[in-house]
Length: 124
Image 1: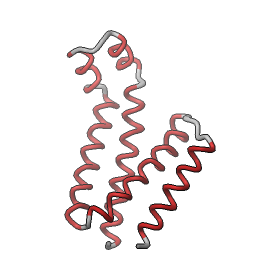
Image 2 (image 1 turned 180 degrees about the vertical axis):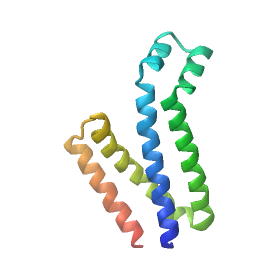
Image 3 (image 1 turned 135 degrees about the vertical axis):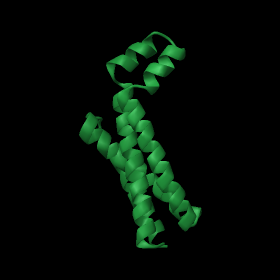
Image 4 (image 1 turned 90 degrees about the horizontal axis):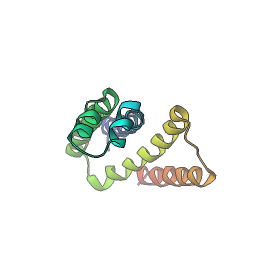
């Protein structure tokens, strides 16, 4: 895999992780929480989809998907797809740093195992 392709893989993973954080912030917002509490219906869907953070998170996801399509055009899926696991690592770290979510010892151990696995894969 070329450095350029690896860069695209990492860009896709990073943007996807950021999208998760933005979506979480949007879904935790007052207007979306009120809409959800009112029951599931068209109004809830519209309120949720057009919340600026939710909408922004979805746009980020779409952008990451476009980058991923470019990755798939350049590399074997069996090689690049396991790198998606890095998204769990980045998302957990961002969740901790930006949202104050806890990182237990078990989560930290799981993150380290993912990193070891991706490192082994990258060297293969």
